[in-house]
Each structure stands twice: as C-alpha cells, then as structure tokens.
Amino acid sequence: MATSNAVATWEGKLRDGKGSFKGQSGAFSGSFSFGTRFEGKKGSNPEELIAAAHAGCFSMALSAALEKAGHPATRIETRAAVTIETVDGSPKITRSALEVRGKVPEIDQAAFQQTAEGAKKNCPVSKALQGNVEITLDAKLV
Image 1: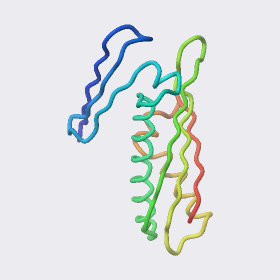
Image 2 (image 1 turned 135 degrees about the vertical axis):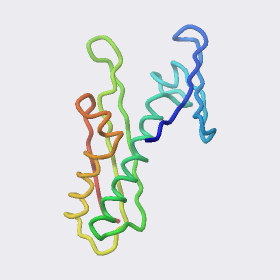
Image 3 (image 1 turned 90 degrees about the vertical axis):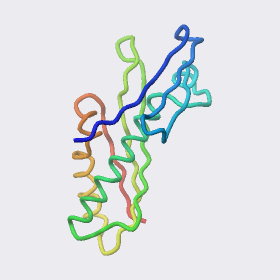
Image 4 (image 1 turned 180 degrees about the horizontal axis):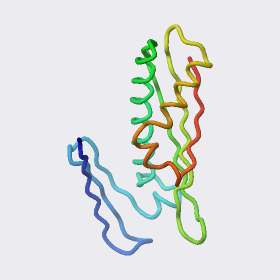
C-alpha cells in the first residue's frame, strides 16, 4: 500500500493571505491565494491539484484497461476541469469533467468509450469523488 504526502501552509487572513504547497517527493510545489482560487487570478489552487490528480489517475486506469482488453494505447491525453461553486452558502467542488483523447490501434469508438467509462468508475480518484462530485466524460479516439 502506498501513502502519498503533501504539506500546505496558509499565512494571514482569508482574503489577503497566501498559501503554499509542496509534495513530499519534491516533484511539485506552488503557491495559492483567495484570488487564484475564487477570482481567476494567475496561480494555482487546490482544485487545480485535484484536476491534475484526476487526469493522471484516469489516464493510468484507462491505459491499464485498454491493455487488459488487448488494445494497448499509443497515447492518452486527459484534461480534467474541476468546478467549485457556492452551494447552500459555502464553496463546494461540484464537478470534474474528464476529456480524454486516445490514440489506440485496432479499436473502434464504441469499445474505446466503454473502456473509458469503466476507467472513470474504477480510478481511485474517481472513487474518492463519487457520490459527492458529478464526474462527466468526453472520450474520443484520435
């Protein structure tokens, strides 16, 4: 069993403070603020990290499922768009929209779509979000 760690630090008040995050491996780090999270200002935010995690996890799950089905992918590119909005007066992550484009020899669109739907349900990040966040999928072969 693998355990991954990250540290986040926040300094100051909510609207004018600043935060930073860093993964234990040292492979990623960044800063965030109220503005980058809720006002569209340049910089990172927690939802961007969730989007990256979901896109990466889904891509690996789809690769494994395609390989198991006898159709190993040449390339999979997944974009995840995570939406945060106000629900009942407080911020809530409401949606993760996955868009995947796959280069997979000898598979048709219907089989690719079916395999992608299975990966959407079975990737660990999807499982963590299910029941709380709407997860949508747009899967196409290229």
